Image 1 (cartoon, rainbow over the protein chains, first blue to last red):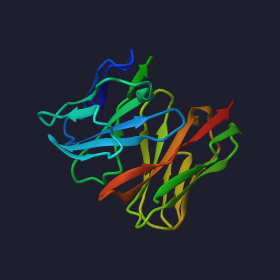
Image 2 (cartoon, helix red, strand yellow; image 1 turned 90 degrees about the horizontal axis):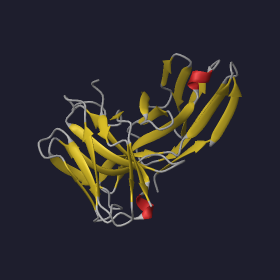
Image 3 (cartoon, one colour; image 1 turned 120 degrees about the vertical axis):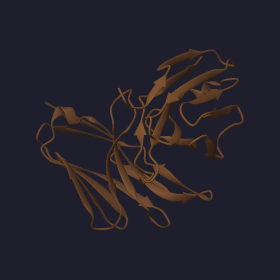
Length: 115
Length: 112
């Protein structure tokens, strides 16, 4: 399968714990995005990488959230000291350089439940 | 404030009953409008890009159109497998960067 893959698909954690999600984009794509989506809402932008450089980060994003893409391939999204409000689907998307940046390829998401 | 509003929130149709979904937007300088399909528990899947008023795109039973204020996703003779949430997004200048602004989606249910 050559699509965007995310791991884990589901994560249940207790409030205050740290969680980490991984995203493997389509191999030739140099742009990578993280979004958060809650039930009945559209995706909410979190952050964007071009290769290994983090070029944008949502101003709404708490300092508890951090993302990395160390070698310009896979990316990780870490949430520290989770809160119940962090419960959501975390979506990763990628796109190749040179295309219209509104045409994204999404993974199946990582669903987080904070108890 | 730039925003995207989709209507209706949910739409139930009988198989074969054609209808339209609406996406209205208020952005300063449209750089592209995008339609996506999202199945339950999955990530969105790209369908169409529209750039300018009057433009139309088609794929199977779906046709997307664009005016200066809104876009429509027309579905002709739908089948149960067309059931999904349809999301609309626009490319807009937000906080000194271009970003996708998403609507909340229309949940489409096609009954056999």
